[in-house]
Length: 234
Image 1: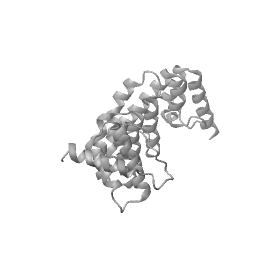
Image 2 (image 1 turned 120 degrees about the vertical axis):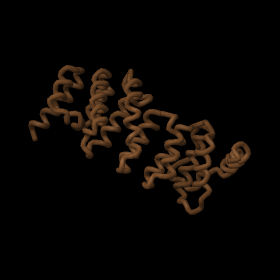
Image 3 (image 1 turned 45 degrees about the horizontal axis):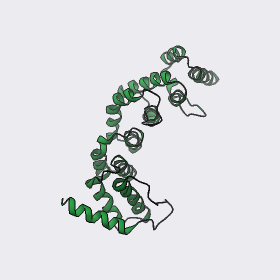
Image 4 (image 1 turned 60 degrees about the vertical axis):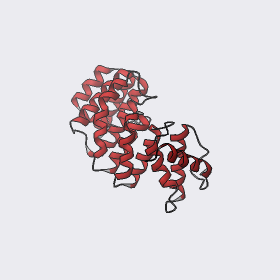
């Protein structure tokens, strides 16, 4: 155990030092070093993302190759997908990560159909909130209507709303209205749907707060419903 801990420490130190040759050699000898834990950043990829873009790119591509090959252990799968999301984040990823994001997109999208809800959940999160891939609006809307897991349906609808922010996307807005107007839903569910509706319709921050149960502006909701009925008869 001490030897493994020492090896992990040496690997993380090499990343911090920007020593790509040593990082690559150590990873070739022990591929599972990719998943050692760093007390501050969490993972080697996250360490490199903040400190050394060239090492971040190398580690993220190794991680992507393993995901494509199905060579990531089940217990590491969520973290591996999240690592890619962070490394190629639309605003906080390493400089030059756009190419990786393009290459990784199909692989991450493939996890939208994974049997484990947590994996579908993180794939949705990465494609939307991390990478802002607006072409997935309709896909995630369908997921929000059809996925068997409540938490996946919820994140998919919020993700679709985020990707459709400010567009007045009729299908997304209608789905959110159906929740807001459904008296059988919890007050919190309806308030979250209202927040997402504001995002879709105005691309702005509402006065919504998670601990408020009366956060819905019903005048606004009625106006949106009226505009939808007028402009989109379907």
